[in-house]
Every structure is written in structure tokens, then in C-alpha cells.
Amino acid sequence: MGELEQAVLECLWDLDATGGAESRGASGREVHARLVGRDLAYTTVMTVLDRLVAKDVVVREREGRAFRYAPRLGRAAMTAELMREALDATGAERGQALVSFVGEASAEDLAALRRALAELA
Amino acid sequence: MLTPVVLGVLAVVLAGPLPALLARWTRLRRTPAAAMLLWQSTALAAVLAALGAGVALATDRLWQPPVAPVDIAVAALAGWVTLVVAARLLLSGHLTGTTLRRTRRAHRERVDLLARTDGGVSVLEHELPVAYCVPGMSGSRIVVSSPTLVALTSLELAAVVEHERSHLRARHDLVLEAFTVLHRAFPRFVASAAARDEVEVLVEVLADRAAVRRADRRALLSALLALAGAPAPAGSLGAAASALAARIEVLRDTGSHRLQAAMVAALAAAILALPTALVVVPWLAGLEPR
Image (cartoon, rainbow over all chains, first blue to last red; front, side):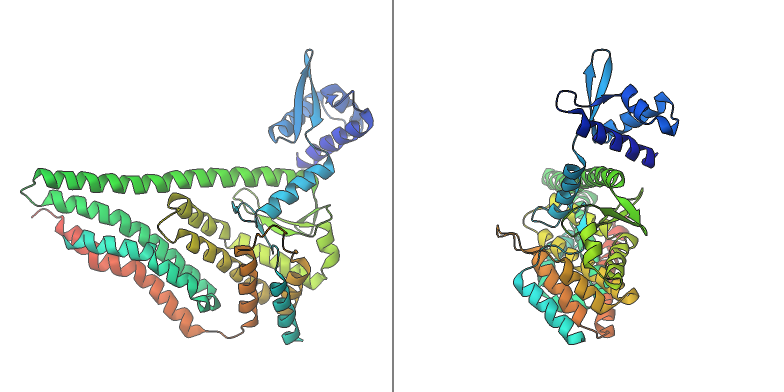
């Protein structure tokens, strides 16, 4: 399922990049048509789209009697969002949801690291 | 009358002066496993003593006839304070737990959608070098960004991954969560912030130790140097920066400190066992119908 979700999200990103500003998003049919090589049932595509909506990665808008699906953020913006969450976790207001290997270091810390490395040499 | 007083004094000492003292005793970090045990037993004993003091005061007043109205009032007050303490802990535990789990799950889901996996590690495409882990019961992840793979040698990367694996294996997230719960429940008047900050340092020290055991000390130090970010311009000095200094200090120290480890562990056991044996058992015996 994870690989399929990735494929559907990729597909939405592609459509978003090529579609232009006036046609943001795609219908379930359009996504299904783009993934034709995978031989998926239409309902499978709809299930995956709904899962992505539940994960708050894709947003859904009603258009007439159907829904249009669009990525909430582009690939780069979503990666940046993850990085921000990871780096904020080491900042002052730590929720400790994520723990970084090492946070920011002062000049003294870096000097201490170099000294420790020199001792081992 | 003695039991509630002893437990009350104990609770105050264990919640305030002792953690403040322990936080300043930096040599304690040389025996991180024993130190972690001591912090946990101190926190647990403080909570138990506080709850025990309230319950003991209430029973002390009600079990000895004749029971005057003032006894009932004191018992009711003690019971109420005990309930408030317990309720704050439970509420803080619930809020902290659900928030952490929701944040981690949402983060993990997006990592899985964006990252490629390489040798059990999720790799994100981004210009900043990072390495971190996403703990979780239903699937944890070790995440690095592509510049990390470029910046580190294979030995250094192995040390970083071993450090993160150790966090996940030892469930350090649960220890941190417990101390966050305590701090959110009692943010003032007790040394809960000092306790949480020190436990944060100890968790890193323990993961460093584990990484050095399986990988290489030099590789870990050079990985720290390669990945340590420049300080943010807006004076956000604090735990993160001093934690790194503490980690370097412990990494340079190669002594075994067996005696200190044994004594600290014994102290940890005593802090939990002695009040139980000397205070709680006689008190429970006193409640038996005569």
C-alpha cells in the first residue's frame, strides 16, 4: 500500500506541475487514467486518494458531484516541512517527538570536538 | 502522626533539592546507565511519597477514634490534594502521550511517502544534513538527508545509525516522555525542568556509548563535528548546546568507574526501597484492625 500511495502522490505532483494554475488538482478518474499501466481498479485509486487525504498530504475539494484532489504541498515544500519539524525538535520548545543526532553547536563545542579528535589521533 | 510527616518531607526533598543537586553533579554522567536509574527512581519515589503523604495523613486522622470534625476536615483536605496531584499527572500523561504519538505518526507517514530507503534508513532529499529518529510502537524510522550521506564516511554513518538504533532499542523516547509528563504536570516549585534536561543529556550519552561499543569513537566524534549545525542567530543557547559539550566530555573519558556505577545504582535502589520498608510497611501494618 505504501508504494501505491507514493505512486499516486507522484502522479498528483506531476499533474500539479503540468496542469497550470487554473486546473489545480485532478479527479479520481484522471489519476486512475494516468496509472493505467499498473492495471488498478478505480476503487483502489479512490481508496488510496482517501488515505492520502486522511494523512493530510492531499486536499480534497468538491467540484459538482465529484471531488478534485490536489497535493497540499509540493515535494520540496513537504520535505522542508519535515526538516523544520526535525530541527525544531532540538530547539527551545522541545516536544521531544523527534530527537536529532546533534543540534546546533556553539564555537566552543566545535573547538572541544576538534580537541577530542586530536587527542585520539 | 509520624508517617505523613516523613513522607511529606521525603516528597519535598526528592522533588526539589535532590534533583537540583544531582543536575549539578556532572560526574554522574560518567556512569550514564546508573545515573539514569537514579533519576528514574528519584522521580518515582517523589511521586509515590507525595501521594503516600496525603493518603497517610487522611488515614491517620480517620483511623484513630475519637474522630473530631477537625480530623475529618484535615482528612478531606489531604485527600483532595492527593487527588489533584494524581489527576494532574494522569491528565499530563494523557495529553503528552497523545500529542507525541500523533506528531510522530504524522511525521512518519510523510517520511514514508517522500523518502527512499537505503539499508534500513530513510533518506530525504534536502540541502541540510540531518540525522534523527522517529520513535514509535507501530514502526520507528531512522531518517537522514542526502547531504548526510555525502558528508559522512561509511564508518561515521555506521556510528550515527548505531546511535539512533540505540535510542530506538532502549526506548529512550518513553523515558523522555515520562519526565516531560512530570514537568508538564508540575512545571513550577519542583526541579522537574532540571530533571528533564539532565535526562535528555543522559539519553544522548547512553546512545553515544552504545555507538562507540559497536562502531568507533573517532568516527562518532567526527560525525558529530560534520553534522553539528552552526548556532542559530537568535540566542537560542541552552540545553542543546551544553548537551553536546557534556557528550564530548563523556566520550573523552575512557575509565570504567565501576565503583561509582555500583554506588549510584545502590543509591537508586535505596531511594525507592528504604521509604517503603521504613515508612509504608509500618503504616500499612497500623491500618490492620486491632
